[in-house]
Length: 385
Ligand SMILES: Cc1cc2nc3c(=O)[nH]c(=O)nc-3n(C[C@H](O)[C@H](O)[C@H](O)COP(=O)(O)OP(=O)(O)OC[C@H]3O[C@@H](n4cnc5c(N)ncnc54)[C@H](O)[C@@H]3O)c2cc1C
View: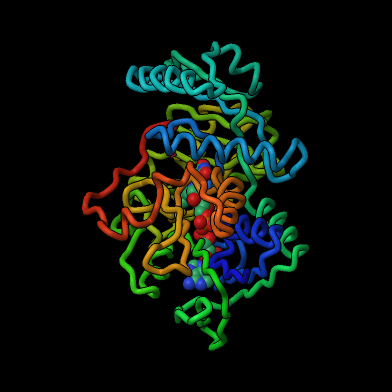
C-alpha cells in the first residue's frame, strides 16, 4: 500500500514509522522542518489526569501506557519520573479530591501525599504556606519531543520511508487507483491513502479536499488555541519530576534548564507578539519560580514561546477516515504528545483495515457535518492543559 503522511510533527512521524514497519510504501511530507510545528512548543506532559469524558480519558490512558511500552525504560525521549500537584485554594483542593476519586475508580495510579513527602520527592521544592493538599501521580512524566521525533524518523527511514521536506501538500485529485497529491514544487505523489497529520493546519487540508473546517482557529489573545511557555538558563536545582503548583507548572527541560507554564498568564498570549526575555511577563515567571524552587537565585528566562494548539472545534480528538473521501484519513488533536505512540500504531492499523474501538467517539464526521458555533473555554486552572 502507498501512503502519503502529511505533517512530520510528533503524530505524523509516529504514523509514518508504524505504517512503514507494516510494509507500506510511505512518503512523509512537511513544508518546514520535522518537529517544527506545535510539537516544538509543548509542555509535553504525558498523562490522562484531568481528561473527560471517559472515552477521552481512555484514549489518553492508552497514550500514557504506549509511552511506557515504547521507551521500555530505555528511550532517551521519555522521562517517566512522576508528577506532584500542590493545591491551595478551597476550589482547587475540592477539585483535586474529586479528580483523585474519579481516577481511583479507573485504576489510575494517583495518591494523596503529605507536603513533607512532596519535598522528599523534590528536595528543592518550597511548599507554599497556604498549600493544604498534595497528590502524586507516579506513572506520569514528560517527553522531549525533538528526541522522540528523531527516534521515529530514524525508525521510519530504516523501513524505507521517503521524506519530502520544504514542500506543501496543496491539492488532491482523486484517480481510479487512489489519489494524486500535488505539492508546492509542482510535483505529484500518487498514493492509495493520504493521512493528514498537520495539526493546527488541518482546515487547509479539509478545504483542499472540498470539506469544511474541523479545528479551531486563533481568534483573539488568550483564547483556547494559544499559550505561553518559558525556558530558563541551566540551574543547579534538585528536581527530577513535574510540579503543578498553584501559580506555576515546572518541569526539567534537559541540561538543568526548566520549562515553565502558568495558565492564568496565558490570558494575553497572542502569536502576533512574543514577549522579550526581559519583559514583565518573563520577570513574573521568574518571581513565581523563586517562590516554588530553591537554588533559583540566578534564574533568568532564555526563551519565551507562544504555542498554538491543534484544537478540534469541540475540544475532543479528530481521528478517522472521511467516508465521502475514501482516500483521506484525518488526525488532529490536542494532547498530541501523550497520544502520539498510541495514534501511530492504531492509525496505521486502521489504514490497513483494523478498526480501533477507542477511536469510535472521535470520528471526523461529527465536525465535518456540524461545526460547533460555541467558543471553547481556555484552560486556566492548575492541572488543566
Ligand atoms: C502551550 C502548549 C502546551 C501543550 N502541552 C501539552 C502537554 O503537556 N501534553 C500533551 O500531550 N500535549 C500538549 N500540547 C499539545 C501537543 O503539543 C500537540 O497536540 C502536538 O504537538 C500536535 O502534534 P502534531 O504532530 O499534530 O502537529 P505539529 O507538531 O504542528 O505538526 C504538523 C506539521 O505539519 C506541517 N504542515 C502543515 N500543513 C502542511 C501542508 N499542507 N503540507 C505539508 N506540511 C504541512 C507543519 O509544518 C508541521 O511540521 C501542548 C500544546 C501547546 C501549544
